[in-house]
Image 1 (cartoon, helix red, strand yellow):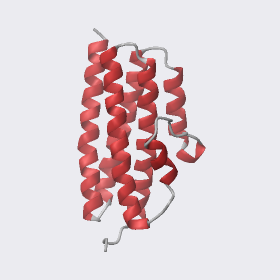
Image 2 (cartoon, rainbow, N blue to C red):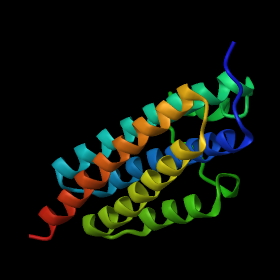
Image 3 (cartoon, helix red, strand yellow):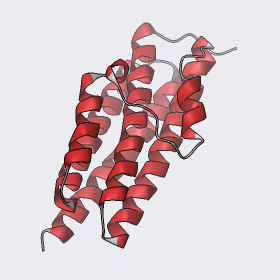
Length: 163
């Protein structure tokens, strides 16, 4: 039987799930708008990583709650169609998807991606400090480090694109 988990930790899992779904959609849309093949490949790679992060967080959530809340998204994340990012996901996620859809060049997309990755890093860093359940804490620590890698990667892409 799983150890107990606090309401705060469940809230962080929920926020993480929403952030990962939104990031997945962001990177898929971003990839479709980038003409540069290396940039497109990187965006699709990031989308795949965000999908894996979603599945990890969703598994933890389900372990503690046994909820069907995210099944619609799990099913969608296993198909080519993108999940709908609407008000139920949160205003910042809706705003970010709107921004990437309106972006006119790779640099705009990369700047939004950098903001997205820095927010994910901050979320998981805060969540790791606030979570006592060891398995979930370990996941948040892993995701914190992973998101910092994304921050560095996007910063490198911005530097390269600026040349």
